[in-house]
Length: 180
Image 1 (cartoon, helix red, strand yellow):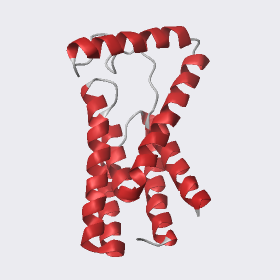
Image 2: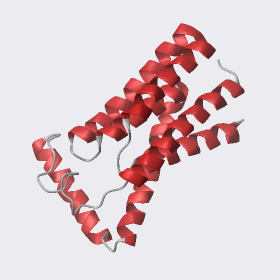
Image 3: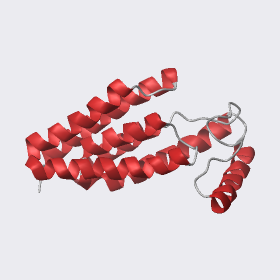
């Protein structure tokens, strides 16, 4: 069992990586590889130094779980590859004990942000209808991207999802502090 300060450091590192990714995603709609690969390495090395080989293995597993879950959305055409790499880095830094809350809070933040974006653009009804169309498409076609409702279509609403990852990271950090 790790102490509070070590857990706090892991989540602070995850938040720092996510915040840098969010800044780039908002500004350029891209998350640079020079951030994600070093972010993965920083997370793994941090866990190795502070928690030994077991910590390294658990951090790698956390990153793998986060990355695979987001990879499914990338395969379905609903998320960029940078988001997949960023959540992998954030998962490696946060570590295994925190990825459940990280993923749930990121999904909730992303949902709230998506509804807010749709409201702001006056496209909530259209967005709800599109979600239904996407669900039907994936039920029938599996993970293949929808022919029109995907990232390649410039007319679809796009949320820089690194913002949701940063929000999920920040909320996970807050949750740790509140639980203390």
